[in-house]
Image 1 (cartoon, rainbow, N blue to C red):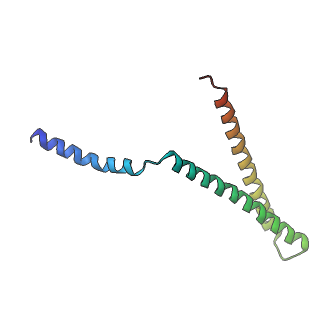
Image 2 (cartoon, rainbow, N blue to C red):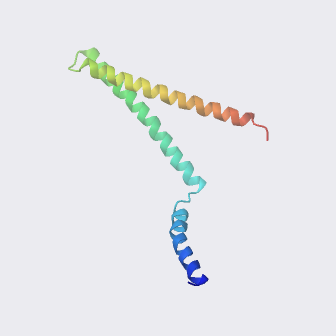
Image 3 (cartoon, rainbow, N blue to C red):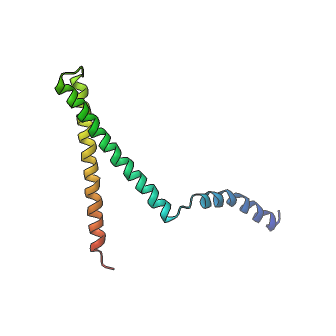
Length: 104
């Protein structure tokens, strides 16, 4: 087997890797847009769970046909999602403050 054949075999294996890497490269702007969309969706999900909890609580208070356990579960889910969002926000603010304290 000649050296030329080994090189052609090696480059044949590397081409699929090169194609994958070139397709997965994103620009900073695209990353910002993706992160922004993710953040908006997450906040919207938290808001939607709060709204759903409020609706079921109002129905229960008005005496409509709603199961108490369903209202309690929805309220607890809304509370947990809100607490998780607040903790994530706190960690992000704490990380930002830590970065700002770094000496360059």
